[in-house]
Picture 1 (cartoon, rainbow, N blue to C red):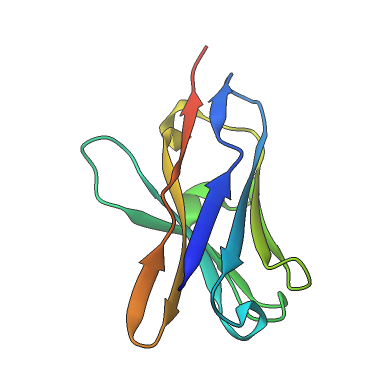
Picture 2: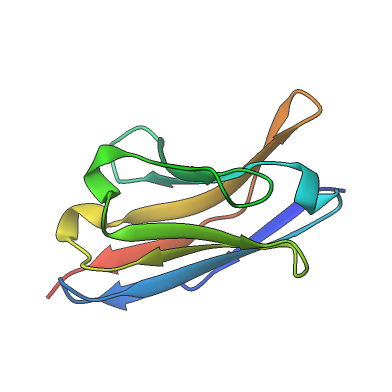
Length: 116
């Protein structure tokens, strides 16, 4: 079955960096686009970044452009999100997601807290 397991979250000071990873299994990873989303308390879940199958095409929401970088390693079935210059408003639970067979599959999420 499809499984997505995120890791790498934690507590970081404003201006700091974190790298999130998502390991996928149960499907042919290299043939599906992947995305990272986040949900802050009291807010709707939002798309943060997405990446195409080969990694050459990516999308970022405006609030993270220039600070976050999404990447993938098809040999390791892994998609990563490098987050630099973190701000308190980046605090949220971060999820990776894949859409296949007309369904959205989500990981369990990893908490990112940006606070001094």
